Length: 235
View: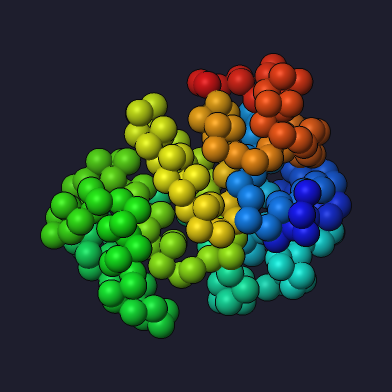
């Protein structure tokens, strides 16, 4: 692996007395797509919350591009290039597609650059630009959420359960775009319960179970050795 864009070292986190993360070690190579797989209850969502600063770790360290993230707030994380698309999407339903996108210009990115990026990756959003975001399909809302994230020019993009509630053909289309985004140099960590589609576009994969990383490797290797763990959901 190359020098990691994200490095998690011996990370622990708990809800009350229940320890959920039990010494997580994870490295995401710069410029790579890594799939983080595992069944419900494995600790994937808690790991995302800790990385994003939404939940405090009880111990351990997180580094992004060499910057120590412990105790960092969401503004600090955005400045060093961390951007998350949370589970369930995050769009403003009562604004149009274009209004959702243009909001990102308040972060200092030009309107033209934001719209060019969004519409080049997702031409369907151009067709829907005057439509209220809340009236679009789940897949189209996910496209909008991804476009808004890309407007921030992230160093690391965290995709939390991209496939949640979407039809398989839409999921395939979204992951094809994930591959194109990675080709532009953005590092991507895909947190997924459903494995096969994510593995198709990933350079590496890691498997969580019981609050720990239990395997890492190339997608084919992980699929061969950990199929009983990672294919517990729809494949």
